[in-house]
Structures are given as structure tokens and as C-alpha cells.
Amino acid sequence: MKFIKYGIFLCFVFLFMGCGSQSDSGPTLDFAENNGGITLPDGFQAIIVADSVGPARHITSGDDGDIYMALSEAHNGNGIAALRDEDGDGKADVVEYFGNLTGTGIQLHNGYLYRSSDTSIVRYPINEEELVPSDSAETVVSGFPDQNSHAAKSFTFDQSGNLYVNIGGPSNACQEEGRTPGSPGQDPCPQLENHAGIWQFDANTTGQTFEEDGERFATGIRNSVALDWNKGEDQLYVVQHGRDQLHSLWPDYYTVEENASQPAEEFFQVDKGDNFGWPYAYYNWEKEQKMLAPEYGGDGETPAEEGKYEDPIMAFPGHWAPNDLTFYSDSLYPGKYMNGAFIAFHGSWNRAPEPQQGYKVVFVPFDGNTPSGDYEEFADGFAGADTLKSPGNAEHRPMGLSVYEDGSLLISDSQEGKIWRIVYTGDS
Image (cartoon, rainbow, N blue to C red; front, side, top):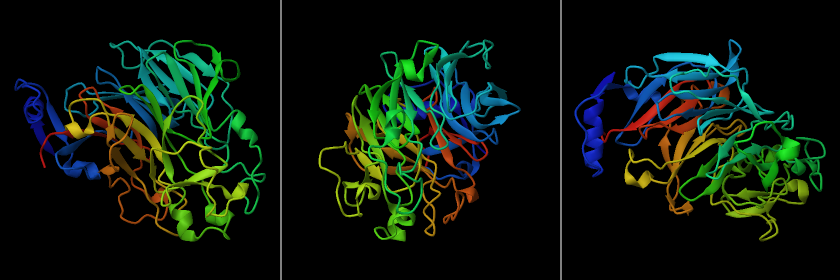
């Protein structure tokens, strides 16, 4: 292990960035050898906060440094892992479990810990003296549609007291016979009524129900596990999981190679009332164009009706599986990261016989409310192999992101529940 005095490291960072000085005191950060198996840009190092906490989904952290992680599988009946670093070395000294819900979403907001299952969102009052809340959960929203696919109810908050919830489409492409070769799409698609979009609720009111209190904010989004409110721009952003199986369902129109790389994973800037086109259209990132879906008369060459659906602000290769998004507004990292976006790609499952891809965290620079350049790889190597045939063979899969209280970035792993904390030290 490599060690560095925390006070010295902060002093170096502040002097390097022209932000003043820091006294030479404080705890020692315990950096992992080889960054815990991942690759990072020069000047960044990783701490392993914890290992094997449990299969993780999203992650959140507070001003006091406590970390809460959602679990996809219960640990002794509990669905939340709570972690605390008591000696300041960056590694969790205490790991406790609580809560009876499993699922994806978790976020600290206005003194509460919000947590989602596939059908509800609850919250726990947070007392800074307690790692595990002593009060029971209050139900914020219940009655979300029960669905067999794309059921994760990820969520985020704006600055005006609103809660935004992803409700994924419960199918691949709204076919009359799901995932059946040649089956046409239902037209109009009835799933759009209660799925495939973002719904808005009151963040501060308990006892709400989906049917009575939810307002559809945007539609035509197949599934956006990754979403965040950009506070600097007062704007909602999501990254969509694109549809699957172009070749296996429509082999006359798409090759195996096209099936592996298309359609795009789309990065959306979302305004109220927007329609992004699912299931009627998809985005071809090589042609930079919305295309008519084959279930609705498309043939791989026919564009969607111009202007009918919103385009992405950026597009990524197919099937990378974007599962979290966070905007960076802290000063620990170099200036180019300010106001930019980090996206965690969980990794593909359906690019066979081509190798699977994704399994990385990328950074997207922003100028105002739109990207100012192409994305770049920030953290890679999670899969543990250069070529991967199946996601089950991946050593780790990046899942959740959270900016820690000192401005470093937390990354959770869905395989075993490893947590990396990425710190900028200026050391290469």
C-alpha cells in the first residue's frame, strides 16, 4: 500500500490549483496498490473504501462522510449498506445493514435518506450522530407499475422541491409478441401511458401514489437508470438504455456487427413535455440520425420523421448500459472537470458473438448546458479482462456514482460490492 499525509496532499492540490494552502495535519489516506485493479488518468489515485459489501446499485454520501449503498440482493434481510470511516484513512471501519427494500435508487436529500424499490420510494430521517437511522421509513410514493423488465425506479431531485422518477418501458420495443422475430410493434404503444418516461412528484410529501399524484414530465425514454439534476444549469439530464436485438429480431435489415454496435445509448437534456421517440425510433450514432424502428416500418435506412422526436446531446456505442450519472461541481479535481458529467457504464450483455463492451466510467466536459467536447475514459479495467464474452465473467461492473464530501468520486460495483474512492493528488 501507498500512504500519503492527508494534509500534505490537500496542500499540494490547493497550491496546484491556486486555491490557497492547508496546514500539515490530519489523517493518512490509504491508497490501493495499482488503484485496486482499475486504470485512471495521471494524477488520480484510488482508495478501496470497502470490498464485498454486497451486490451494489446506486450509492450516496453525506457532508459527514457517511456512505449509503443500495443493494440488489438482501444481506440478512436488509437492502441498504451503511459505511463509516472512523480513522480518516479513507477505508470503511464500520459497515452496517438496514432497511427491508432492495432495488436501485438511493440519495441523501434535505435531511432524509431516500430509497427506492421497484414499486415504491421511501425515506428515513437522518441524524448525523447515527449511522443507521433509528426511525422507521416513511413512504413517499407507492403504487408504481409492477413490471418484469426495466423495473428500476432510479430518481433525482431538483432545487424546487420536486422528485423525478424513471419508469422504464416494460419491453424491448413494444412488439405485439415480445422479443419475437418479425413481430410488429403495437401502434399506438399502450405502454407509454404509464411507462417509458420520467414522472414528477413532490419531494417533501409522504403518502403519494403513482396514479393520483404522479405527473408525466417526459416520454419516449426506454429506460434511464442514469439520471441527475444539473444544479448549475437547473436542468434534468438522463442517459438512456437503447433497445436490443436488431439482428436477431430483424435479420433482413441488420447484420450481426450492426446488432453489436447499434443503436446508441443516448444522453438527453430533458425539458417538460419532451418526447424522445421510444419505441417508434432509435438513434444511429454513426449516421447521427434518429431512425424509424423496424417494428414500425423501418428497414435500417429510413430516418424517423424529422423534428418529431428530441435528439440526444451525445451518443455512445450500443449496449454499454449507462447506469448512473452525476455532475461534478467541486474544486478538488482540475478545472476541466468543473460542471462536467461522469457516467457509469455497467457493461453489455447482448453484443455476442462480438466481445462485450462498456464496463467503464467516462467523463463528458460541459460548457453551460451542453457538452463542450467528446467523452473521455476516466476509469477503466473493471472487467478484469481485455476481451469479455459474457458479463458474468466480469470481475467488477461499475454501477453507482457519488461525489464524496471532499470532492473525490465514489464508484460502486454490482458484482460483489466493492467501492472505489477516486482522489486527485497530482501524482502521476
